[in-house]
Length: 560
Picture 1 (cartoon, rainbow, N blue to C red):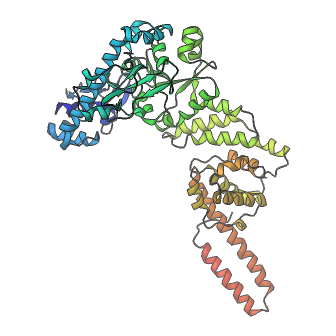
Picture 2: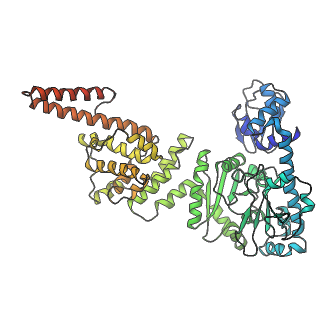
Picture 3: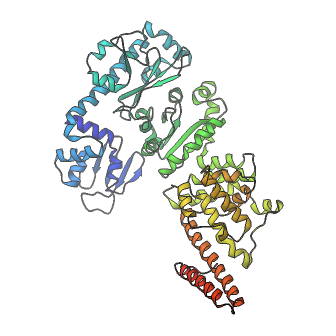
């Protein structure tokens, strides 16, 4: 039963769980809120994630996550475990088998790590140790991060004999050949990967002799989910809590180098695309994430991709771009002052991306497309006020004077007269369509709209292009670069940025239909007055007018 307890406490963050029932506010390394177990006006209920405990200074209630669930829900210990096991994805009725498997799996990783570290400082691992030392790392740092090597051809039976075939297979660290389990990362420098509580759960093996691939990583296992972990978080979290910031770098050596140079609040995303789970981990321990990238185009692209995971958790990190060709490991080894200066000049990631993409060379349509792409990153921003602040800043940064540009290009502009006001709904409809992030939704909105509904020829042509594009490539964003309509689309979108483009599209779709049918009724009435002597034709026209009038009754719209 203790195994189940440990797995639950490992998998479920106490602050995240309790925040479902208590409004917790962060104060450095802990959270505070009103105690759920007694009435109070001043918060005295404390949750400390690093210790996995809660405590109320008012009524004395205290304990871990299981204690909280028992007390809050009036459950027995076993029932509280059963409830939390379901949340942690554990089959409680089969816990004995599951728990032993996970415990043995972790123990196998620890055994391998300890043996690899031993070999590193012996003759078989001499070449590997010399490599790391030549890179400027000390034996203290090598030991602190548990680096090691399992030499090629070495037999691990002394370790493996303690474990079942099932556990060995689940580790994903071996392949079976000629009756033996062969370690997949043999001959490589091993980086042990630990969870946030310091338990070894995976490895990454770096090639030292020119073999491909450069890195071999543990596959995902019941104890290792790469996108949910950060390398070195177990050691960095206490520094992150005290300094309220956490550096995020790409490589293992980057982490070790920064640690050795005094930057203890540093973790690595382990070279994978950044995930929401990783962003949530960072936010748990630090108010201010700082991502560090190489200053080349690849680094800029990587930084751009980190925006969405952070936006999803209502946070925008700061970003540091190092000189081209440098990473934290190489730059700190050359000149710590330059690195420190780069860190001191860090900027808000979203604002810096706007500055970079607004200065990129290209046509107006390309710039407008960059603008649209950037603001779409904010679609899922939970906090509306902060989202609007960023939208305003991004608009100011791009600073595209569309009126002057289009005047120079002899493109017809909207005028502040009654005629132009009548056409605004066409522009709003098309602009909103181009801001919807799902081509299937766009197709649904277009259902029931015909090209004749557009009174302006150039807007009608945009509509035709959108329909044609959806029927072929399906990617309407390509129209921003269309020679015929791209610049006009860019103009419309940049003048009209909608928070709810789907809603705007539907409203203006109704206006399109309403105004088209209203105009048809007017035409038919003119035709009716001219056919007063033709009874048959007049009746036919009256039927059409009646049908259109009934259609219009569906819409509660004032004619535009």
